[in-house]
Length: 117
Image (cartoon, rainbow, N blue to C red; front, side, top):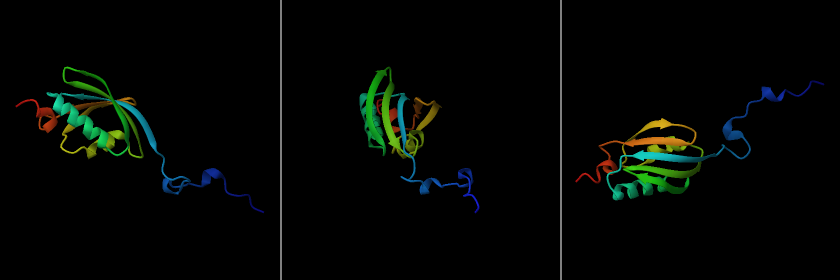
């Protein structure tokens, strides 16, 4: 009688795993700048809260146009990729680590320009 195949010979696709795909749980700080008005700041926070997978947000600090926003996020797609779903926000990710994303709002973004008029 032949022995059963070794476990390493079997490959299970992520979709075929018991329970489906694996959720990612992230607790990140978004460092976002420049904000030129509190209205722009509030719009950005609302847009982040509306993203799929965002469970909670907390302002850690806001000083001289720079927001430090703690975000609790749970989804299969990393938050850095999910940010592409932000509507009306032009940005660039300046740096990324396990616990922090630095986001620079572009001058063409309505949020960055909201306080200029």
